[in-house]
Length: 209
Image (cartoon, rainbow, N blue to C red):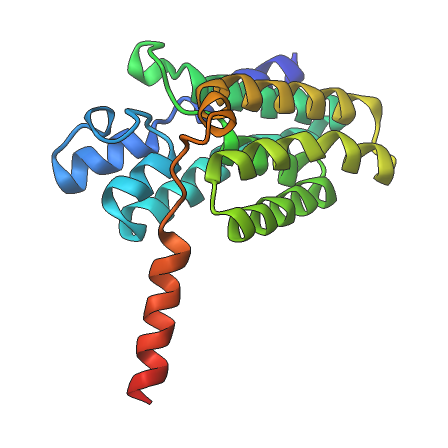
């Protein structure tokens, strides 16, 4: 019964569409009409910058992290996996948006793994950062990072539910990025300009000094 309750709570947490809500509150606009139309952190950051993008990243991560961590502490890795997976499903098809299309689960999946298996989540996050700042493709970074979850779980000897969850997360993230994957294969995917903006700011600061 406890595991079932924690799983439902995980789904409800995941269903909180922070990208949609924050844009509505602070910009009085619908994020679904901007960029890719996705409510996730990447599209919010691309459309409105870090002042809205960063809070969405943190909140989307937290809604996976909190239920997964609480469930793992209270009922073990199996319950943590179910709560984390439910949060990811909630992010993809949020109750609070009438089960319409949500986000691509990347930040929520990362948060869930930080709650269930912190070392796995941390290493996958490091992979994301490395790929992103090397190639500047957020979508590619997300897919490579998610795919690495299984490897880290196996290498670090986590229980089998964590490894199965890692496989589920990897498949889910890749499937939801299939349009990005096609564009990458055809050389049509847009690189992020975030690194170039930071580089220009750093150069300006050096010049002023």
